[in-house]
Image 1 (cartoon, helix red, strand yellow):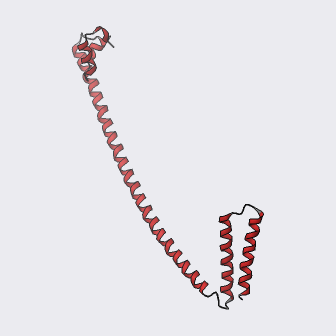
Image 2 (tube, rainbow, N blue to C red; image 1 turned 120 degrees about the vertical axis):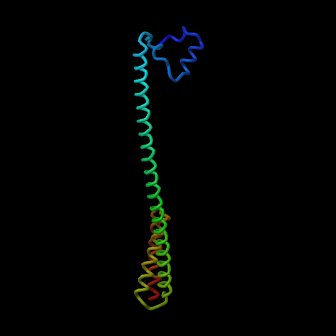
Image 3 (cartoon, helix red, strand yellow; image 1 turned 90 degrees about the horizontal axis):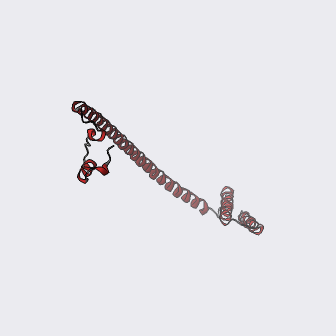
Length: 160
């Protein structure tokens, strides 16, 4: 590479800004212009082929990415649709469970032992669930939960 500090400033600027640097000046080859022009032409052609190959590869990459994004978007939309559908089913089932439990609790005063047994089990489960959320940290808390369950069972049995 030539020593730029020995060149006039205008030539330095031309060399730095010119995209087609004179290879002859850099390598000091000024004798055989045909050989140098052929070398420049060959290097230029090779560079152009590489640039074109790179453009094609980049276009293929962008196309693959576009297809991948479209497929991912379709999968997301399908998952969202399925999630909304399942949320609707869950809501309907919860409403049905609530309705059935209400119907069973409406028969609390009946002499039907099956209904009374269900209510007893239902109330015990409710007490257990509430005690799980309160998470008693002491033995006294656990004793309180057992006492509540016993009270519920005895009140249901009294109504038999």
